[in-house]
Image 1 (spheres, rainbow, N blue to C red):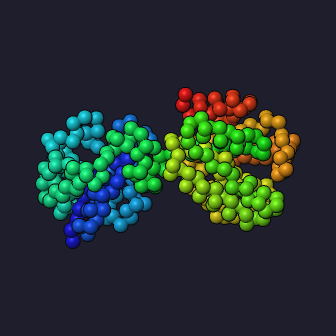
Image 2: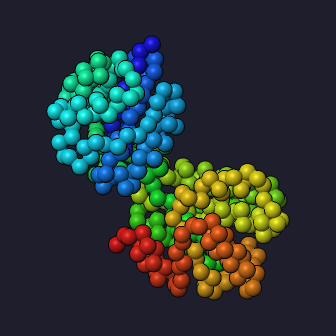
Length: 324
């Protein structure tokens, strides 16, 4: 049984890393992947937990996928062969390795200290001519060098929620234009209109799943942000309002995804406009708004309340996101 080792920071995981991992999987029986927890600025957007999740989802066949604190994280020369002993000592508890895979000749000494053969993969970067440094300079431009799973996880999903006629669609579209990215339309509204303003209990799970699918597809080609006109959580509240209950799978979807968003609640201070599809005005709209706000608070989800006309709300969103 041959055992192999691949290691790195994976900031982010890209096609070059994947070539190395897949080469290793083709040559060894058991592969260990070590992710070094770096304190570099890039790790703020790509914490080690996220990097581990990429590897776990893409390479479930690996024997071990684990994080280790980088013993020389603050040393700019940590890749120097002189530090090979420090890193070799740090992985000794994992046992013997037969092969160590990397793209840098300088890791020959590290492999030797482990009693392993050093296998160089695409040293000249001819098969995958990129690097983490290049990709971090403009993730959108270089998104083709990342698996869609990786790239889409770097996109910040921004959702606008609130009762009817509070400007959610207008704001999602406007923010996408302002920041040169994409936004997702509300599938539930489209289905409702397509069915002649008729719906059923079962429609709510369908709407939530399709809405999430739209987001996942759009995230693959968004630039830094994806603006969402409602989400599955909104659909859950419509089901609760209409029927007093919701499908267990809808509850599960919401519980699994609520942490994926940056939340903005559109205040109910817009003039109510009946566009032929809306159901609530006055006290009913206020109650629905309050129901949503209470739920966010109970779930411990931070949110920003947007008030005033559209231009004011645009500035409030930008301020909250920290963009000019």
